[in-house]
Image 1 (cartoon, protein in one colour):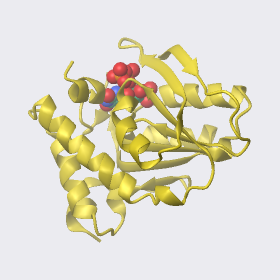
Image 2 (image 1 turned 90 degrees about the horizontal axis):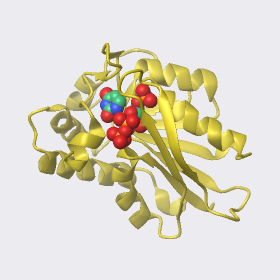
Image 3 (image 1 turned 90 degrees about the vertical axis):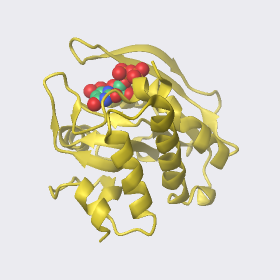
Image 4 (image 1 turned 45 degrees about the vertical axis):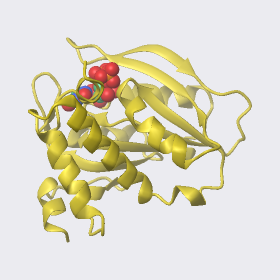
Length: 212
Ligand SMILES: O=P(O)(O)OC[C@H]1O[C@H](OP(=O)(O)OP(=O)(O)O)[C@H](O)[C@@H]1O
Ligand SMILES: O=c1cc[nH]c(=O)[nH]1
């Protein structure tokens, strides 16, 4: 196993629907682990944060063999931080369409507050949703979003999530509530702080990526 990658992820058991890159022995491992290390550095200016995040997104996409997906793909960024992953994935999957989900986590209560949900019309029945969301902390935002897709009748087996940082609590919750949904994350961090931020995590991903 790659030593740098290994350091990124403590050894707790993960649910079967979760794959966590930082534990695997992969040729791109060191580079990805280095990007993660940079993202964790709170002193990094937003331009550098964005550069490292974009590099990491490209490495994630390289590893996903996206060119072999035969189904129609609906890229589904959760606004706003999920938009950061969109350019890389749109470029790789040229025929993809967009499902827009806007859910804001309330800063006081950490509860999800929805403001936008727009799916493309006339999708094929086996269309595959790729949800783009760098941070899954309590999983409140993600469970709410998956609940909306389920309510609209979409097949949960056709949904996968691309994340960067997940809290252990979040992956366990996703396993309990949506075991059919595959989660691919770079790393699973062990705890949440009293404001429900991932620890060690990287702080507020959206603010750091967009420079707000
Ligand atoms: O798992 P949860 O506890 O729900 O937290 C994760 C959510 O919080 C962040 O978004 P935020 O609402 O801060 O908005 P942003 O994307 O605009 O930064 C993040 O991008 C997730 O959407
Ligand atoms: O740690 C966290 C939790 C929610 N949203 C973030 O951007 N970071």
